[in-house]
Image (tube, rainbow, N blue to C red; front, side):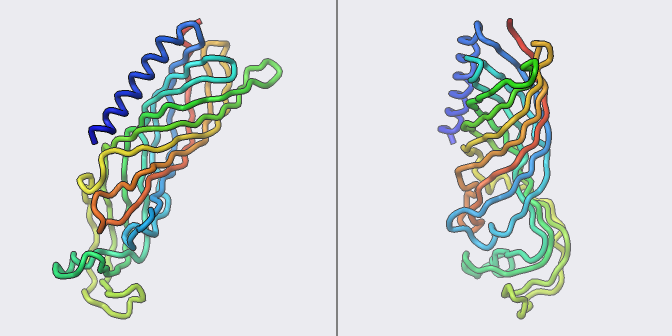
Length: 254
């Protein structure tokens, strides 16, 4: 964990150094916000508990600096509040130990209900950004960006609802418990690693506003390299999301 915090501080230090060295270049400060469409991808060695997620919806917003070093290339460090997670609707595996403390850790039972893993991260990316001006007045710009991020978990809950009998097998031929409610709102932050590393990237369309700044539309995504679960019985998942953002950046110099 200490290593991840060190990487975060290193990112901030690099950002400050870049801004200090970019006084003679175009320098922008921006805000952005929009929609995150995350999912939890089952990792290698995933258990039935960590499989079967589909996408959910959530907010994504943040601030950034856009530091130009040429007409083609800039660096874009930032801080994002990123919605992650996923949802299930229908049959789901449950650790059998929840119903029988003597059950082995790799034994599962099954029930039908809804669940949504709501995870929110603070992500600190540093993106390499390449852009090309076009249009009659050269006031439009197409941009591509990619780079690493360090993420820190700030919120994690598993929200479930519905009622169902509990079965010993996925074919639901052997009922082991009567119909019961699965309505719950469980804080799962202590079951997950507090930090992650990954990659962000995307494409954007910018419109220059009289050399005072620009508005933009950006479509992209992010992916976490590390399994998020602390405990093997919870399975293995990677975070990831598609994002659609709009924003504005104001020019700070020149």
